[in-house]
Length: 105
Image (cartoon, rainbow, N blue to C red; front, side, top):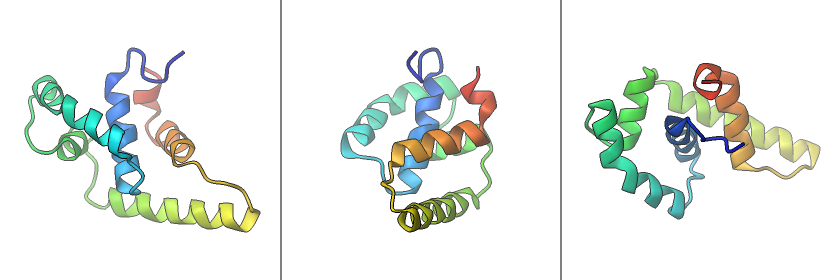
């Protein structure tokens, strides 16, 4: 089953985390930007897509810094263990662990 099937907002959350850790690639960014007007209309919000996701999820201002720190620790641990790192795997684990109500809808 596709991770986003029936959960379109989950893609925005995943992309939000990827963006915070500077791993949102250009094609993902372009896709999200194209969906910006739809997101704004659906949520009844304005601002950047990041601002709308943050507001909708009621994220604290400190969340981005916390995510960056967790990512940094994740990278350090992977380096110590000599394993490769996938930003997408990190995001899935992070979002699944921290926002199970969105993931399990």
